[in-house]
Length: 301
Image 1 (spheres, rainbow, N blue to C red):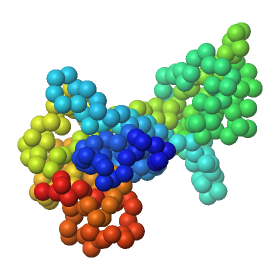
Image 2: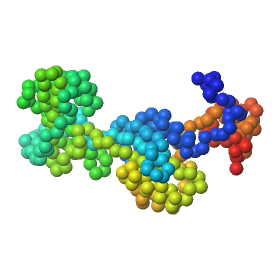
Image 3: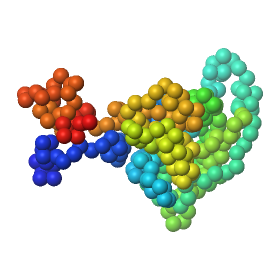
Image 4: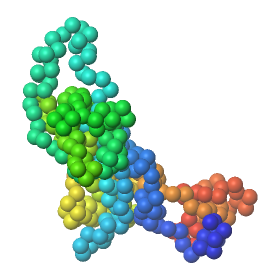
């Protein structure tokens, strides 16, 4: 593909993509790990690695009348995880009163929820697999009688972002005459009702700050886009930022992230580069083929 006429050599290029274009391209092709890093290493971090599920990016999102938003991340935020072992095992090993402990942990009951309705067998298995169940556990669930429940222990996330709140989840499957299944569940918990089965969907606004854009202009743009798209949390990607500005953005509910971590390297030619401070500048025999900082001398200001 690099030999295709579409991919012209660097010295024939008219211009190098500006920073906004480069970051939007990076977001458009980013994989789940790269987008996860954006969410977990921004300052302050929006999520912890343990709470990030699937992430997808949407680039250049329309917002009514003004400039389109640079990007929006669609995130599955994990709120509940299947426990490796029942929390009561530790108390049993100490000779504790299991029945009293169980009553305390399961004193409240949630309403009935439908995890999936009229699912094919393959879809039901896939849904349960992605929730963390093993093939053996899924087989047990699917073989239960109509009124039987499959019980499993889970942990919900606490205020500090850790999975420390145990609760008991009861799941049952209803088999229909057309061969489909409906999966229902309800939770038994101590104080806080689990927010979902495993995760909730959230959108995060991505804004790229132009080099000459002032603090007020940037904040106005982000606030407009947050309101237009009904998004609360945002990440500002910028090349450089003063400590005072960073604190101000953070106080406004906006995390900051360095652009250099997202900018893709471009084909370079040190002979034609305008970065005169670089030791490889002008070198005919430079081994550098891809560079994050390449800029044609004709575009250097």
